[in-house]
Amino acid sequence: MKDQIIETLTALFKGADERDWAKVKNTLAENVELDYSSMTGNPASLVSSENIITAWRGFLPGFDKTQHQLTDFYVMQNGSAAHVHYYGKADHFISDELWIVEGTYDTELIETDGKWIITKHKLNLIKQDGNMDLPAQAVARVSEQRN
Image 1: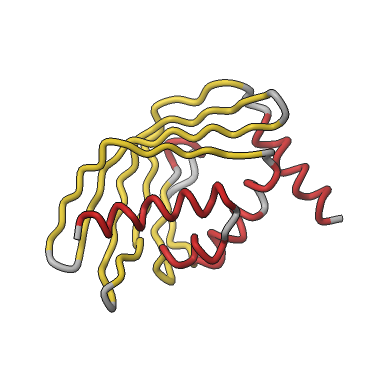
Image 2 (image 1 turned 60 degrees about the vertical axis):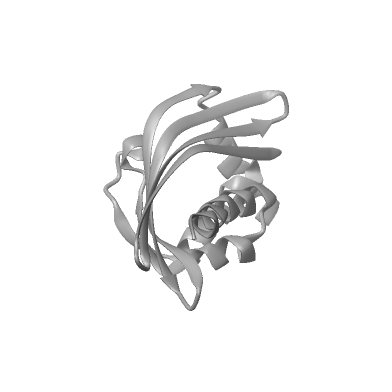
């Protein structure tokens, strides 16, 4: 069971890096409590999986590539519910410039029909490093690609 739970989390980030939105959607519940407040200052909110993917599509393809690395999974499972605490590092590249986000995550999942899906996803930011202008550049690049 724990392997399936970790595979779901890995697929979420791998799907984002591959821009494979079907893979990302396959890991998410219909609505997910998303909490990036430690990085953005915006409060946690319930967001549809479609809106999460729309937001990521408007941002991640603006980077030449992204690479998420996940380690130190601590899985606490209680029947068909699980809470996972783990470390994540995300490298975001535009040309030879790099923006790095490091933190831990607290992700909650439920098992439905033999499949684990994410219901709550929280980033606990440790630090950001590198070129802090890259996120805005990425959004602008996506916007330009669409026009």
